[in-house]
Length: 188
Image (cartoon, rainbow, N blue to C red; front, side):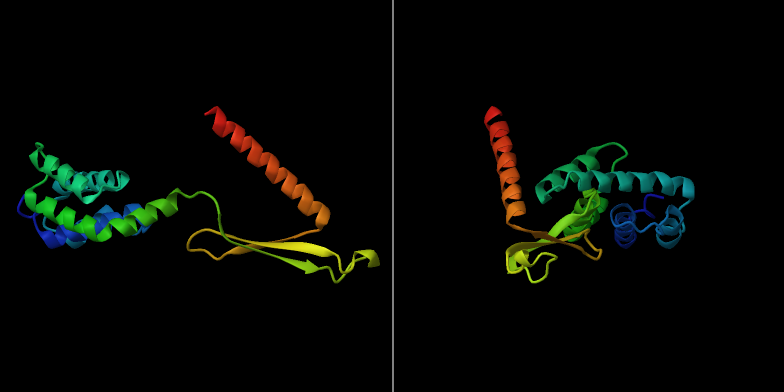
């Protein structure tokens, strides 16, 4: 069986499938699909441990965000370990990581973000043109537009309007927050 699991093309395909499944959210890539497409001649009871080993190696490399020196040291250790990988497999894994590291890292970063992020902020000062009270017309107002969203999804926009009193209150609160942060930083 060892010779059947040595093929560089099949191993590269297996690593790609594992990355698609584990890091890019493609649930359709199953153990059965990988086995049937890449290693149909290998019995399932021999394929499963091999798949688990490759999945573990790939997850270790990705979670440590290994640079190429760390990768080489890790793969060398894996080749010397009993029940580890062959030098040919290490070469395929190294080549795979060098070409997929950036995309896997970006995917892991995107998965680790739980909430919307601030994508953009713009502001301007306008003169109020409509009001229930004629005395408020032509008074300055600050308009703040915030753009929120998750990566790969459409943005949501929030528009805030502040009169002079609200601007002063907001600046006072921001000043209090800044003082709190400064006092915490000095205590540390």
